[in-house]
Image (cartoon, rainbow, N blue to C red; front, side, top):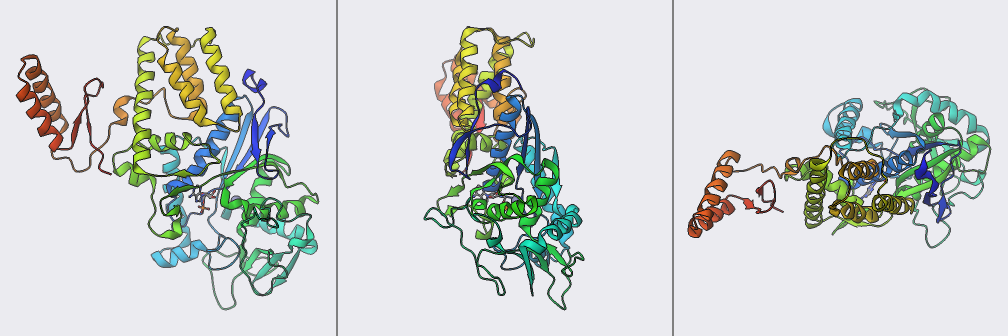
Amino acid sequence: MNDNATHPLKLFNSLTRELEIFTPVHPGEARVYTCGPTVYNYQHIGNMRAYIFADLLGRTLSWKGYQLTHIINITDVGHLTSDADAGDDKMEKAAAKAGKSAWDIAKYYTDAYWLDIDRLNIRQPAKWSIATDHVEEMIEFAKKIADKHCYECETGLYFDTTTVPDYGALARANTDEGEGRIETVEGKRNQNDFAIWRKTPPGETRQMEWDSPWGKGAPGWHLECSQMSMKYLGETFDIHTGGIDHREIHHPNEIAQNQAHNCSAHSGANIWMHNNFLIDRAGKMSKSSGDFLRLQVLIDKGIHPLAYRLMCLQAHYRSELEFTWENLVAALTRLKRIVMGVGKQRAKAAGNQAVIEHPRLVQIRQQLNEAISDDLNSSKCLPLLEDLLAQKKLPADQCLSLIAEFDHILGLDLLALKRSDLRVRSKDATIDETDIEQKIDQRQQAKSDKDFALADAIRNELTAQGVDLMDGDPLRWEWRIEI
Ligand code: AMP
Ligand code: ZN
């Protein structure tokens, strides 16, 4: 822990629907589990919002000096097409459709996901915990709770949700606020009961199946997260995160299993945190809607992926965020200005690691601490950063130290990113970059010769080729983004 921890960190706990002061289970440590992707397809940019949020949380905890252990899982088996145990396994279905093995599909989409994690400057967790590496331990977990809490029926081993106290408290399933809707599966005793082990149907062979006391089959998706979170973080750990859809079914089911496993009414994690959705004009962005935006589509338009990260940070994680290309381009422009501001400070600084002592900088740092401690209010941190960059007369080395602290939390790669890295990349340019530079030199010459007709003609020619001139920007020109 360090000085930054003196300001209490308040986080919104979905379990109590209240802001709570973070108090670690193990003093000086922070143990966080994040529900990761189901790797049957690419992650869309909405999914990536969930990991940007988890990364912001992890960065904040480590900035405050807690020793962070962050686990993110990879669901490569067990997630059905409905969150509530109906339908097919997403992996097997995708494999059949692509004519590939489920293992190949998992590998391909896990790699694609990791690439996007990297592009968004999301820090590596302590461990990527892969579900299929833990199946034996999941069976042990299920064996432990089977007698008291489960029953077997034709399709699998089911968890009886009436055997634990207050099932569904997280979802508020019994109040108007709850949105959980469970589909009926034959043989279930109670509507909310869920499979912890799914048997392979008689006469069928699945690509991913294991022997178990309940026959050949695969673990349920909820069992995976209960087992892996507690294996790596302990039976009581600090924070569990996921998208807000997980508040309704997946996390209530994890909690029920944790309670059964630990013979306790405690949910397993002290704080359950959920990011809200990225939406577009048609509603929530989802993979089942067919057409969805992935980070690669943004990059193909020429937009740097960190502009998307900034776009997410501009909103509070608990607010819905609407994706529009206009919002994204505005975030790119904001990022350019920030990066140019940092560049100016870098040019002035001598490069020494400076202690922040100047009263104005101490004050900004305090404001940063207050903003981020207020349930990770990243949108409030950004104007503080811009305020810092606008300071002209402060010691540059100290300014840079403070910028590094902002970046520790925000993860915009501010100390490495250059204005030129943010240059839009045009895929179908009809003119090359050296020609553009030459034309701009000619235009400047024409302007100093007071030949304004020629200067305008050159500008118009470049505009027609998709090039915008920017007097006053060190890059001088930029490809226009077609949105
Ligand atoms: P999945 O790969 O479907 O298991 O989802 C990965 C993560 O993305 C989960 O934490 C989901 O709750 C989250 N998620 C799904 N859709 C969205 C969305 N439109 N906006 C933000 N998060 C989402
Ligand atoms: Zn999970």
